Image (cartoon, rainbow, N blue to C red; front, side):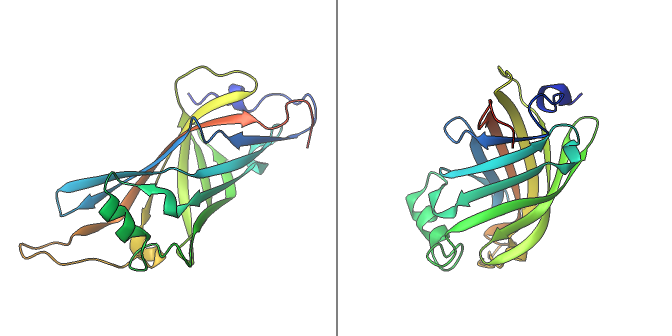
Length: 191
Protein backbone atom coordinates (compact mmCIF):
# COMPACT_ATOMS: atom_id res chain seq x y z
CA UNK A 1 0.00 0.00 0.00
CA UNK A 2 1.01 3.59 -0.54
CA UNK A 3 2.94 4.70 2.57
CA UNK A 4 0.74 7.64 3.57
CA UNK A 5 2.14 7.47 7.06
CA UNK A 6 5.55 8.53 5.78
CA UNK A 7 4.22 11.55 3.93
CA UNK A 8 1.07 12.50 5.82
CA UNK A 9 2.14 12.67 9.44
CA UNK A 10 0.12 13.89 12.37
CA UNK A 11 0.44 17.63 12.91
CA UNK A 12 3.16 18.91 15.18
CA UNK A 13 3.90 22.45 14.06
CA UNK A 14 0.87 23.42 11.96
CA UNK A 15 -1.12 21.90 9.15
CA UNK A 16 0.91 23.02 6.13
CA UNK A 17 4.45 22.01 5.26
CA UNK A 18 6.61 23.06 2.33
CA UNK A 19 8.67 20.38 0.58
CA UNK A 20 11.03 20.99 -2.36
CA UNK A 21 12.09 18.68 -5.18
CA UNK A 22 15.78 17.86 -4.81
CA UNK A 23 16.77 18.37 -8.45
CA UNK A 24 20.21 16.87 -7.87
CA UNK A 25 18.83 13.44 -6.96
CA UNK A 26 15.56 13.54 -8.95
CA UNK A 27 15.06 12.64 -12.62
CA UNK A 28 12.39 13.70 -15.10
CA UNK A 29 12.22 11.39 -18.14
CA UNK A 30 9.99 10.82 -21.15
CA UNK A 31 9.49 8.22 -23.87
CA UNK A 32 7.84 8.60 -27.26
CA UNK A 33 7.62 6.40 -30.31
CA UNK A 34 9.86 7.28 -33.23
CA UNK A 35 9.70 5.87 -36.75
CA UNK A 36 6.84 3.53 -35.84
CA UNK A 37 8.77 0.87 -33.87
CA UNK A 38 11.60 2.73 -32.14
CA UNK A 39 11.37 4.75 -28.95
CA UNK A 40 13.10 7.98 -28.04
CA UNK A 41 14.13 8.17 -24.40
CA UNK A 42 14.95 11.59 -23.05
CA UNK A 43 15.17 13.66 -19.91
CA UNK A 44 15.17 17.25 -18.73
CA UNK A 45 18.31 18.37 -16.91
CA UNK A 46 16.83 21.49 -15.21
CA UNK A 47 13.54 21.28 -13.37
CA UNK A 48 12.15 21.55 -9.88
CA UNK A 49 9.03 21.90 -7.84
CA UNK A 50 7.34 22.55 -4.54
CA UNK A 51 4.83 20.48 -2.59
CA UNK A 52 2.62 22.31 -0.13
CA UNK A 53 1.53 19.47 2.11
CA UNK A 54 -1.56 19.72 4.29
CA UNK A 55 -0.93 17.04 6.86
CA UNK A 56 -4.34 16.79 8.49
CA UNK A 57 -6.27 16.99 5.19
CA UNK A 58 -3.94 15.70 2.44
CA UNK A 59 -6.53 16.40 -0.28
CA UNK A 60 -5.90 20.12 0.37
CA UNK A 61 -2.23 19.73 -0.58
CA UNK A 62 -0.89 21.24 -3.81
CA UNK A 63 2.03 20.78 -6.16
CA UNK A 64 3.86 23.22 -8.44
CA UNK A 65 6.48 21.95 -10.94
CA UNK A 66 8.56 23.87 -13.49
CA UNK A 67 10.70 22.55 -16.34
CA UNK A 68 13.35 24.37 -18.39
CA UNK A 69 12.41 22.84 -21.75
CA UNK A 70 15.71 23.92 -23.33
CA UNK A 71 17.43 21.45 -20.98
CA UNK A 72 16.08 18.51 -22.99
CA UNK A 73 18.59 15.71 -23.54
CA UNK A 74 17.90 12.75 -25.85
CA UNK A 75 21.56 11.78 -26.39
CA UNK A 76 21.50 13.41 -29.84
CA UNK A 77 22.72 17.00 -30.20
CA UNK A 78 21.12 17.33 -33.65
CA UNK A 79 17.74 16.04 -32.45
CA UNK A 80 17.84 18.14 -29.27
CA UNK A 81 18.55 21.30 -31.29
CA UNK A 82 15.64 20.47 -33.59
CA UNK A 83 13.30 19.91 -30.63
CA UNK A 84 14.38 23.29 -29.15
CA UNK A 85 13.64 25.04 -32.47
CA UNK A 86 10.42 26.77 -33.55
CA UNK A 87 9.26 23.51 -35.18
CA UNK A 88 8.81 21.93 -31.73
CA UNK A 89 9.23 23.59 -28.32
CA UNK A 90 10.23 27.04 -29.64
CA UNK A 91 12.25 27.63 -26.47
CA UNK A 92 12.95 31.26 -27.34
CA UNK A 93 9.25 32.09 -26.97
CA UNK A 94 8.23 29.30 -24.57
CA UNK A 95 11.24 28.54 -22.35
CA UNK A 96 9.36 26.97 -19.48
CA UNK A 97 6.71 24.33 -18.85
CA UNK A 98 4.73 24.37 -15.61
CA UNK A 99 2.35 22.03 -13.83
CA UNK A 100 0.02 23.26 -11.11
CA UNK A 101 -2.20 20.77 -9.33
CA UNK A 102 -5.91 21.39 -8.96
CA UNK A 103 -6.80 18.31 -6.89
CA UNK A 104 -5.12 15.57 -4.89
CA UNK A 105 -6.98 12.28 -4.62
CA UNK A 106 -5.76 9.55 -2.27
CA UNK A 107 -6.09 5.99 -3.53
CA UNK A 108 -5.07 2.65 -2.03
CA UNK A 109 -1.80 2.32 -3.93
CA UNK A 110 -1.14 5.80 -5.29
CA UNK A 111 -2.08 9.45 -5.17
CA UNK A 112 -3.77 10.91 -8.24
CA UNK A 113 -2.73 14.47 -9.02
CA UNK A 114 -4.92 16.40 -11.43
CA UNK A 115 -3.81 19.76 -12.67
CA UNK A 116 -3.01 22.17 -15.46
CA UNK A 117 0.09 21.68 -17.60
CA UNK A 118 1.31 24.78 -19.45
CA UNK A 119 3.56 23.83 -22.37
CA UNK A 120 4.38 25.64 -25.62
CA UNK A 121 1.90 28.40 -24.80
CA UNK A 122 -0.98 25.94 -24.38
CA UNK A 123 -2.67 24.76 -21.19
CA UNK A 124 -4.38 21.38 -20.71
CA UNK A 125 -5.58 19.29 -17.82
CA UNK A 126 -3.43 16.24 -17.09
CA UNK A 127 -3.42 13.43 -14.55
CA UNK A 128 -0.35 12.10 -12.78
CA UNK A 129 -0.05 9.05 -10.55
CA UNK A 130 2.29 9.27 -7.58
CA UNK A 131 3.50 6.15 -5.83
CA UNK A 132 6.29 5.16 -3.47
CA UNK A 133 9.85 4.57 -4.62
CA UNK A 134 12.27 2.37 -2.75
CA UNK A 135 15.17 3.91 -0.91
CA UNK A 136 16.03 5.52 2.40
CA UNK A 137 13.57 8.06 3.76
CA UNK A 138 13.20 9.95 7.02
CA UNK A 139 11.14 12.79 8.49
CA UNK A 140 12.92 15.31 6.21
CA UNK A 141 13.10 13.32 2.97
CA UNK A 142 10.75 11.08 0.92
CA UNK A 143 11.03 9.28 -2.42
CA UNK A 144 8.28 8.93 -5.02
CA UNK A 145 7.71 7.86 -8.61
CA UNK A 146 5.39 9.94 -10.80
CA UNK A 147 3.83 8.67 -14.03
CA UNK A 148 1.60 10.22 -16.65
CA UNK A 149 0.85 10.57 -20.37
CA UNK A 150 0.28 13.55 -22.59
CA UNK A 151 -0.58 13.98 -26.26
CA UNK A 152 1.93 16.37 -27.83
CA UNK A 153 -0.59 17.44 -30.49
CA UNK A 154 -2.81 18.90 -27.74
CA UNK A 155 0.00 21.33 -26.90
CA UNK A 156 0.51 22.52 -30.47
CA UNK A 157 3.59 20.35 -31.06
CA UNK A 158 2.52 19.31 -34.55
CA UNK A 159 5.77 18.75 -36.48
CA UNK A 160 5.96 15.37 -38.16
CA UNK A 161 6.83 13.63 -41.42
CA UNK A 162 5.05 10.80 -43.20
CA UNK A 163 7.01 7.65 -43.94
CA UNK A 164 6.95 5.95 -47.33
CA UNK A 165 6.13 2.59 -45.74
CA UNK A 166 3.30 4.15 -43.73
CA UNK A 167 3.12 5.84 -40.35
CA UNK A 168 4.93 8.93 -39.19
CA UNK A 169 8.35 9.80 -37.84
CA UNK A 170 7.17 10.89 -34.38
CA UNK A 171 4.28 9.47 -32.36
CA UNK A 172 1.79 11.66 -30.54
CA UNK A 173 1.63 10.02 -27.11
CA UNK A 174 4.41 10.85 -24.66
CA UNK A 175 4.98 8.81 -21.49
CA UNK A 176 6.31 10.87 -18.60
CA UNK A 177 8.05 9.41 -15.55
CA UNK A 178 9.88 11.08 -12.69
CA UNK A 179 11.82 9.66 -9.79
CA UNK A 180 11.48 12.35 -7.19
CA UNK A 181 13.17 13.04 -3.89
CA UNK A 182 11.41 15.71 -1.89
CA UNK A 183 13.04 17.40 1.09
CA UNK A 184 11.44 19.42 3.84
CA UNK A 185 12.08 23.08 3.05
CA UNK A 186 12.00 24.28 6.65
CA UNK A 187 11.65 21.44 9.14
CA UNK A 188 11.42 23.78 12.12
CA UNK A 189 8.68 26.17 10.99
CA UNK A 190 5.02 25.79 10.14
CA UNK A 191 3.53 27.53 7.11
